[in-house]
Image (cartoon, rainbow, N blue to C red):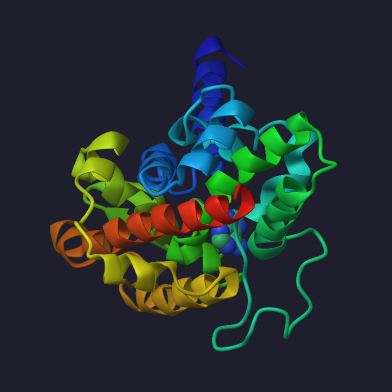
Length: 260
Ligand code: ADE
Ligand code: ZN
Ligand code: ZN
């Protein structure tokens, strides 16, 4: 093998490696959700969270669960980023994965955080994971079909680049909008008290089912190999922004209940 072949192989390997590590909701999406949540925390919850996170904000810790994905020691948490169960069935009708999923993962985080005997270190770890997973659950394709890995296997074009349906929703649309996470949070739609209450309604499984309903629409929104661009952005980016905002409001609800 000459040096050129080695370099090209390294480049290709590195590219596919990066693909495999694609961020859920992208960093910007997770941070926007976390930043929106900050605005809905009670004083009491905020104080305890600040202490636990040693002053790091929710936005900063929101990508932790993705950052540890490539570390072997944390491999067991990989299935916690999504949940796949048959459309129009209820979660648990089929036996959930023994390796855990988004639903059991979130429940584990809440249980550890509510347990007065958990150590500070355990609580810190599961709080960071929780901030991330509540974000993930609002990406519709994280409640998608298992057969195509939540749209990861559905190849499409994003403008002139190769992509897949999952990545379009995780990051392509958000990145192309070219707003920082704090700008996205600051420019979230102004909601009435009643609208916020409606979003707060329900609990984890209701929110999961809501995402699954959206996932069906997302699957119907594009054909394999289709070139998506401005039109797709126009039709679906408002949904992305709404999901980020719902994620933030609901994350705050969950945290306020834990740290009450
Ligand atoms: N990422 C990897 N596998 C996935 C799946 N089955 N559903 C959603 N996201 C995924
Ligand atoms: Zn994802
Ligand atoms: Zn994730």
